[in-house]
Length: 233
Picture 1 (cartoon, rainbow, N blue to C red):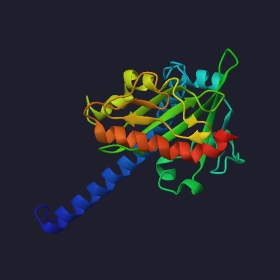
Picture 2: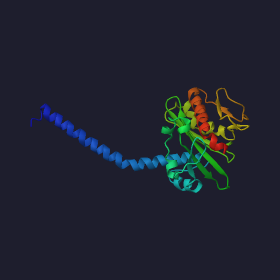
Picture 3: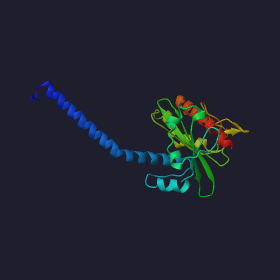
Picture 4: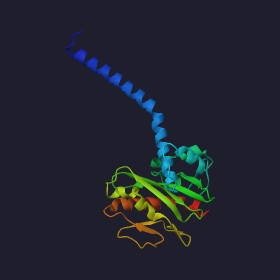
């Protein structure tokens, strides 16, 4: 075959494409379990952080089992617990659930049992920031009203501005805030211009991160509405 001809060039290119595609598919398949494990560990680290339990990839599985273990379940919009296995509840993809109406979503709940006997209810939340998705975990005391801790993260918010939602300084504001007022759900407002330190339902918005702050505010209101029936029970 003429190596300078078009036929040879076409066949050579076709073979190379097939070989490269096969190799990439093999590598992706081989790395998939590792990637899944890394994602699960990162999720467990965030969940534990919302209740002030620090962990690393080296010990997160042990700590998660110690404090949460099988105490993971799903509730529906009516607050009713669903008959699913803990791992299925852990694996709920909020990026898909958030696209559904509130009444159709599945709502995971992570119960954390601390060493002092206290129980915290950790609720995952997800919404939209300026440049992409934002998400987090809010831990409530056993009154299902007072926030014990919160952790938030993002995919692509602006460093120094919207990305500040992932800092301890911003997240610490949520401790002690309440989401109900005389039995009515009011959520927690992220307020531009700031709020007094003793404001029961508000925190300071991020300076220069208006849209991200608004997105986080909307995310909390959205998901607290979804969990409302469960929390009132």
